[in-house]
Length: 87
Image 1 (cartoon, rainbow, N blue to C red):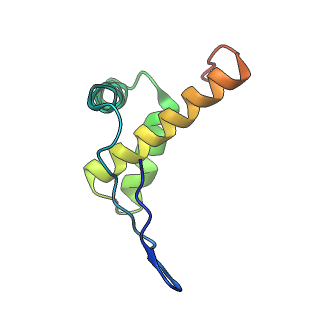
Image 2 (cartoon, helix red, strand yellow):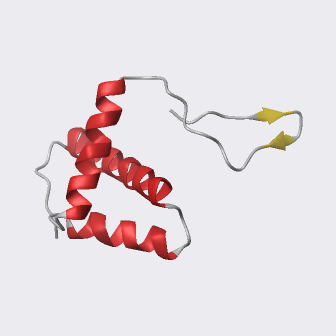
Image 3 (spheres, rainbow, N blue to C red):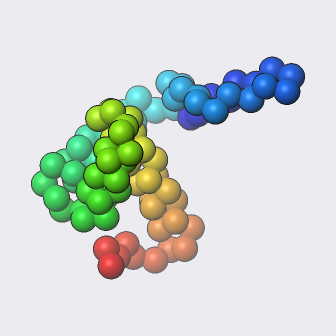
């Protein structure tokens, strides 16, 4: 759940993640990404993580970016009702 900070004409470009929503779901997604990156089971996720690290992102920032990517993949799978393919 990203927070939005704006006042008048000012709109922040860096927003922190709020702690709304399910704590267990956040933990499960975080652990899933950590396991997927560590064991190289998901090559696309590992490539995305490596790209973020190459951009100079910190470890946890890159992991959270991967969590957001995973959430987008899950949403796409649920809306299109198709099986997940790694190709």
